[in-house]
Length: 120
Image 1 (spheres, rainbow, N blue to C red):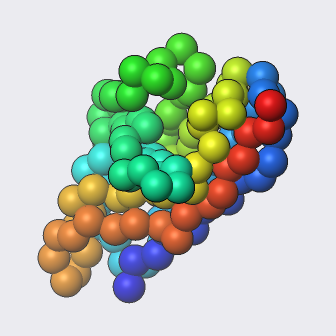
Image 2: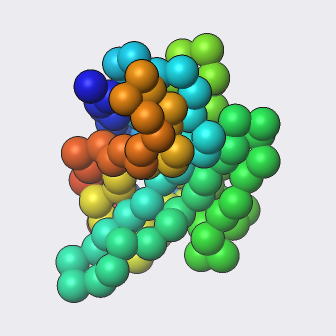
């Protein structure tokens, strides 16, 4: 059973910073890409940033230059450093492990979500 455990959410003032972490555990052979998505009330879940096992990154236009995604493959952990936070960044942030290979096959996994609230 694969689990993604997120940490690091909270409340911060506009202009502040937060760092999210997501650790994958279980019988995992490999994870293709890990990423962060977010969902604000009344809105669809959207990609924030993703990183492949080789280190290639992809960011939403709204966070480019402010957020940085990184990954420690040996720890099966992905991080999201969020700087210059804005009220519009307020959302539940979800960790994703794409095409995760386990003894049971390949599957996509999600974390439980962590709340990020940016006050103005």
